[in-house]
Length: 268
Image 1 (cartoon, one colour):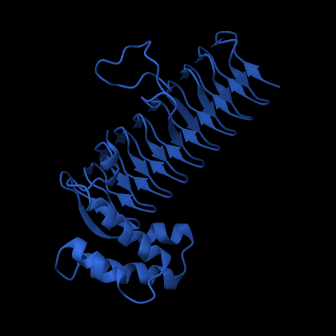
Image 2 (image 1 turned 120 degrees about the horizontal axis):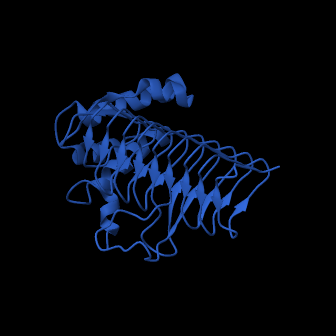
Image 3 (image 1 turned 120 degrees about the vertical axis):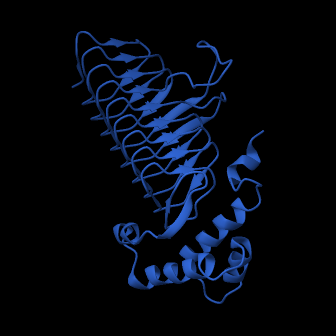
């Protein structure tokens, strides 16, 4: 059974699956699809052509799928889509924008927590088990991989990639890619501070896997030389595991772009 508050405004072209709950004063636009058991608290707005999976909870005053914040982009301009997975907790005043390109999508995975005031810009990809703390601001075209935890008021420049199971300290301003498994803090430029051991434990990595990542970190960041040179040396070593290889490949990709943002090579 679908529960809809009498004050909600729902386009006749929207699809609500079994068990959806729509609270007071919500607005749901045309082409929206909402999966089983998803709940919207009061004053949630869902824009056109947004696809939402099952078991999500949108707290009060979220605006999901609104027009991207681009100069010269009119409110009636054709944009792309927004796809959200399952079992996400999306707290008060979160905003998530669709792609600016027709036929493309902003993508949010599953089992994420977005705290109060988080903004996710157009054309971003947010994978699974990500925590974005209060007022984290994600610019357009960013990618946040599995298990990342960004503390309060962290800012991401456009086209930045944050590797899986990274942690960023509060108020970090991140303007270049961060390889997987690391801790980063500071503001323009941010600096890598160490390995995110808590994240590795949370991910269920074995002691052997964790030790391999720690040893790779020391070779990459603590023995002198440039990061790109150190990455090549690690890549040429014998028997590196998939996690170390992911670190090396992330460094190699980002070094191909002058600002250290691999995704910006696809800017045009």
